[in-house]
Length: 410
Image (cartoon, rainbow, N blue to C red; front, side, top):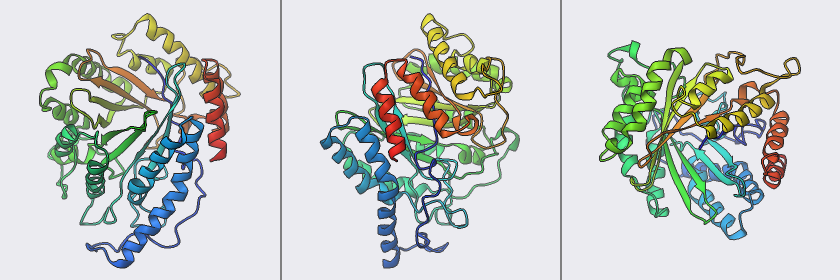
């Protein structure tokens, strides 16, 4: 139940010199209607992302071993329903461009290769921020409309999608159009530099099904209400119809740990993730970022201060520490010990990101961790080499080879 999930930059983030679109793809600020010219721009935008994001996705699906029919179906969905929602390529010189919090260079899509347990093939996933042409204008200051338009399309296309939980949390966590001054600024998480508020995720199953997830960033809404992100997220969960009684034991354990260690570990609530499926089988995922950068701090969080410590977790944490040393030890520090902290960084996405997976029928939450190679590993090549070596030792020889080939092909 314990594993490390390393996040390695989005596939596109590794290749930052992938060009710029020939013209701005956004309408002038304040424009509220879509002209024929703007419709043509949307078509150009879709073709642009077909090349820049469609090709990496196709390569990942092939290297992960998906059959040709499944690949065609997944690519058809991506090209038909996703590419026209992604906006233009990141252009730091364009002040009207929506700066997505999805990746550090504001690329609004991130790909994921899930290794899975021994013997199981990998799963390809991706997450996006759907960007409305009016994002950042007075008509849609927090890009809420982009998400709503995508949801409308998905309701028609994905028959398995269930929006009961999505609608519940969207009402409580997405911002109003005008943000007042917080009633109690000292209680808020007011350091966000991004106005992104919601992402969508898609897991591409071997069966051909697409599992959909939603991710809510509560900072702006919490700021409106004068609350912390964590308090707002737990309030929204407590108001979930029918769920609190069944998930309250694991939630209470998690909240008790966070409140006890919040200052010590510099914990901050970043996001709430949910499955867009039947509430009976949906999960909650509470994301927390910590600025405590030693492996001892990681161990403390992954066991919730010892509450979840078992023989199985001890074995898993030994493996995680091995990967930690492979990724973050330097030539001058060949054997990074568990007490040594990684260098401090002021960057908004520095630190270590955790999430706590809570199922409706589960009596415990399952912690998972993203290893911060984006800020602390020496190079992409080193990350690839160390990760593939680590996974090969655990019986993932073919998957490790294919993963390396995929990144090199991209």
